[in-house]
Image (tube, rainbow, N blue to C red; front, side):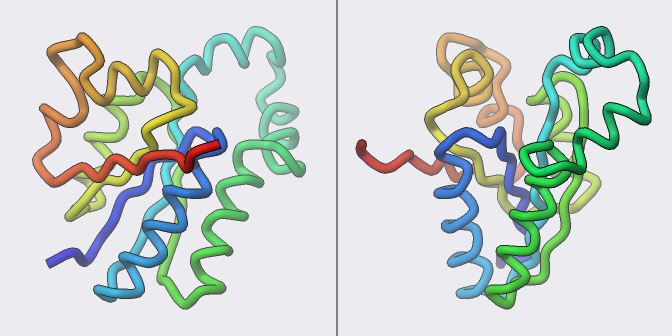
Length: 147
């Protein structure tokens, strides 16, 4: 039933919880996992660091987005899950839906906290056009643990 899981992360605290759920689900059903991060405002980063090579280099360093994506992918692989990752830029809902379609995902996993306005948009916090409403596959919203 679930062969491919798309896991959207924003590197907030709940991202590790989402990855843990994805890992457990993938191991239980034998699914592959793609970890996706969508940079919602790439123009701001390009303005701050105009040199693309420098932006790419910083992304690969510890704490950088590409470094974090590779770390999450490796965590899944170390647990025995077939995994890869993708880094996108632009409008999060649109990018997640497009990636879910091109990857042929059977389920999308996202976190419930730490997203602020982005999460409220994706999950329907007052907006009509949301990820949950537009997705053609189930969306699992993972709650962050109580503090």
